[in-house]
Length: 600
Image 1 (cartoon, rainbow, N blue to C red):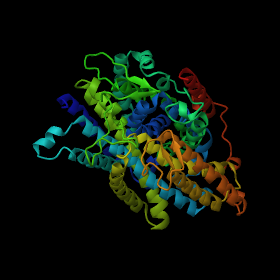
Image 2 (tube, rainbow, N blue to C red; image 1 turned 60 degrees about the horizontal axis):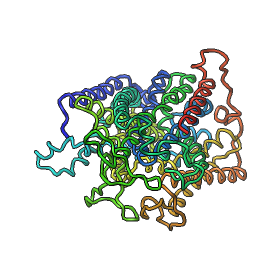
Image 3 (cartoon, rainbow, N blue to C red; image 1 turned 90 degrees about the horizontal axis):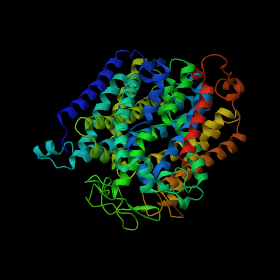
Image 4 (tube, rainbow, N blue to C red; image 1 turned 120 degrees about the horizontal axis):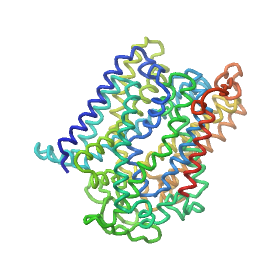
């Protein structure tokens, strides 16, 4: 494929805007607070869009499209069950603790509430997680560039092998993000994320419209794919009767409670955006504004995957749609169509499952659909939207990493007393090293045929136990630092043991589990992720309680503003309904219930 001059112009204009925002933002970075927390001066609506856009990275745009193709509309549970309730909870209950404590990061809040060792453990694990997440975004973009064959001709003219395109794309993308985060800090990231949000919507809304038109609308998808793909709650009574491979309890507890609350309420990547808001009320409204947008994101990121799998068994060369053959609720592959077979980059051969069957490369569902339907000009917009999703996801992780590394690792344990300018310099250097480490993580992500599976596995190890710690720390003043630290360690260890003893059906022992022994097989990778999270959260919760009961708690006067019972409540008796967090939260919950009923 060759991009036209208009396409290249759109991409170039976007990159100039991204770098320009970084340059402008750098002029307002006068202190560490400016660089790491945008001066705590961001309006609620800007912070809200940044809150959602930081999560709307390549792993969501491409990963959720991949999950849509692999699991169907039940992927929307990641939003309607696995996001909105938690976003309401953090806005109503948790932001007063974060914002009111004046903590500069989530690990620093843990130090205030518990002790230094709990902060150290969380900071170290979180820093590692952000690197992996950033690598996922980098891998997704490199895979996209390789798939679109954008640089095939230039590489051919230079006499370079086509396989180098993947590596070159990783290096080039890392350089762009490094420049604008190094210069603009969090403020540059936030305003770029707002720009990127609108680009993503502009790029993918037309793709969904064109794709639905091709397959006969939603009714055409229902006819082609059946209820296992088009009904969110179909077969949830048992794990073996739905595409996710998990029953209603595993879904509600694993995703709806543990993974969801663990991510949205404790992950500094998103919390940092709310902490940059210009007031307590704005900070509380930030995740609620984001929730109002988040519930509709499935219609632009999941539907492309459904459309792609509907077209996979027979490409629409003549404009006619050949229906895939459905056997036992699964699509049988006869023609590569939109979603190709996944190829091992090392051997050049198809990747096989445990039964010797080729695996579909679900990560290419959305990019290939874009290639199919977008003409010159629109292709530039669509490609720019994918670039924006990558930039958004990677930059969000990098800004979170440089803040946590600087304040919670470097300042805490390496150089405690230095001037503000020194810590800003360290933050900029951390940006450089964080991106370098992300490059290595990108190659690890290439081993999964659905990057959302990989992302949820990381969250099961990291966010699930942390949420148990936060829940007890904020609502049970008897929780101790020894309990929190021991619980966190126990939760992470339990996740590792569970992962090492289980394996998804048809997968090979190794990176995806079973590396200790295979004592249980799950119907899907996502089911394994959900139950890994449940076990990790439960272990952390129970161990934290047990250890707290036999160790001495901190005096109540030291916990003022850090626990629910010892924090003054904010009055919301006055003001418009959309400015009152509790009422706004009720509206969000009611809306998401309606969506679940419509797509049940």
